[in-house]
Image 1 (cartoon, rainbow, N blue to C red):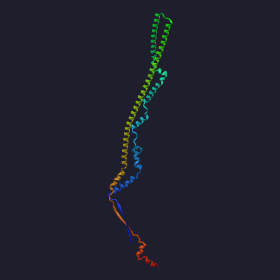
Image 2: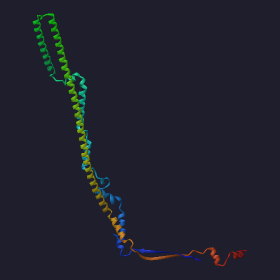
Image 3: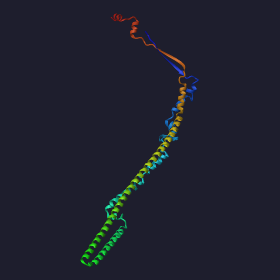
Image 4: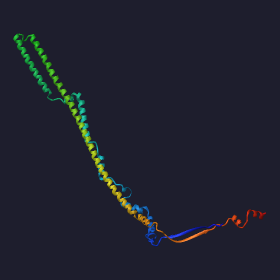
Length: 296
């Protein structure tokens, strides 16, 4: 039994009322061909460069406050108090190390110490002379003046006087030396205290500078962020302008999408396959048995 297959094809066309918006010059299709035919440089590259928004131009540079901070950081050094305080500590150590040097210790002794010692020695000499005079008078009364006993007593008094004068000298110098060493220790302690004070002042000054720079840095970050937002806004506005033809085409396409098109014609093609050899034999009334008898 023969079978047939039909293939239908329909031709459609844009309704005449929509042709000005789709196929006519200025419509969606001609405009799309014109827009999409432009290369990247023409569409985006040249306009972005002309607007100063191409590549790295879109990245905001350092704000004036940030540049100022950079200059300050580059020139920042240790506070002057650190060097002055270190020198003070070294001076104090020098004063301590010189305590065993008589020449340096002498610099801390009073220049009038010998005068004081001499006064004490003169007072002791006068006291001895008074004692000697009293002894001579007593010897004269007893009639022994000029004798051996009187001479022995006078010699003993002289020896005692020299011993006392030596004691006054050594004690006075020792007291002066002790006072000089105390002065050295006090001076070293003073230098140490000064060094600590200057070090603390330097640390406080440095911390204050760092806090100030941090505050300026935060403001500089705000300045740069604001500049970056302005660049981003300009870039977005320009991109919206450059993409406006494409977005307009998309809008027009959305408006006409779904509008039914006009069917202008239809054609149908039918094909019937040729019968097989077996079917032809069957149609002619020939079976396997009849064929056997025929050829036999």
